[in-house]
Image (cartoon, rainbow, N blue to C red):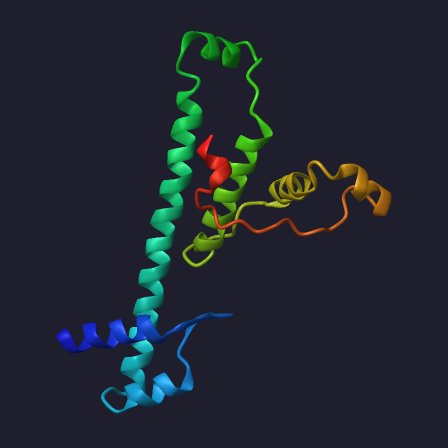
Length: 165
């Protein structure tokens, strides 16, 4: 068992992010081949990849859940609850942006685990574009259509300074 743990540790230290997940540089493969078979290295690489994705899934879900607890908890007092019931509750654009960044990263990680079809993202993707363009709408409409296919800045869903409100 210790041998496999050592292999996984070496892979975790040497592996780099590739288009299809973690990849080992050629020099690391050669070094590991001295002690392990290619199959053992590939299995350990898969195990390390799964472990990293699982950790990221938990971290991202925790971040989203914490923000939702804060947001929903803000409606716990009588006045804010009344605003919800009466249809007068409003979410600030910064809060929507924070939630969108967290859900975006969670969706990226879930792609690796999801067995069925993903949810219809058309409205969500449109919201991302609008948030990315928020504050620069005049510049955007001067340069083209309001709904152009600009890609939003990709956040990783982690807490950042604007989340510290």
